[in-house]
Image 1 (cartoon, helix red, strand yellow):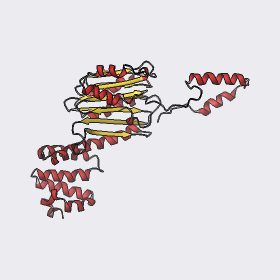
Image 2 (spheres, rainbow, N blue to C red):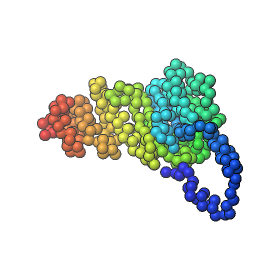
Image 3 (cartoon, one colour):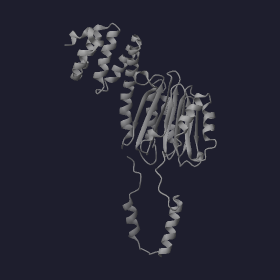
Image 4 (cartoon, helix red, strand yellow):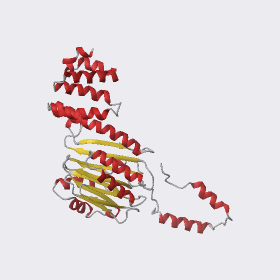
Length: 347
């Protein structure tokens, strides 16, 4: 983790090397008063928690019907504050002196037919804290907007284009957002979650948040993208506190992409769209080869879906491998009606 503060001992040693002069108590008090005032702490005030100074990208893939947000910060659990998205509507990132009402309100405005710029203007209009806000908005069709208030701490700014908006504050420099943009554009054609991850990591490689690293999050929404198709959260992962949030986020996104394909496969199966279910489950199994903790269960459901598609040999092969990798699945297989046709071959 990059250091947040300079070592206190070095400064203390430097002070005692030369002659020491003693200030009158009244002068000391005056100096302290100036420092307190400069820090913005009034009488009786308590230190406020740090704001979610950060860098983020909101993006849309209209062809895939996906919208999403990726964010990283030297801030605890940034994923609880910044990202908001809704399938078929758009995505919002609210940060710096974040106004979290901008998320749901912004999505409501987009759902009502406003453009990204129009929604942004409505959100900021009448907001007394707007000079300290930073906001990124993208619609499901790819219209985008970004705003950085004049009081956001340097370096602060953003970039936008068709299908994305990028913003950051308290960054090491403008290169952070430009590298996020380059990486996102260069990854065209890949799943949105992968593009967001690549973009976020490029921003970190360019220096990221000047205070260091702590948390990161990635959210992608697609209609019926969640478990059994009951929600739109296709990928929703967070690292709340870790010295290497990018390493952890990469691991979790890898698992989440398998899980997303698996959800699509199983949802198709439960809705009796067997050929479509097989397509997604086969892809899930391929990706799961790099995720050994998920592979047995993915193969088990692949066996069920292959059998539903009339591929008995393929179902037996997948089921046998699943049971070999995780013998704990044997009891489930013995009682599973979906595998009744091949039960004897699994004994």
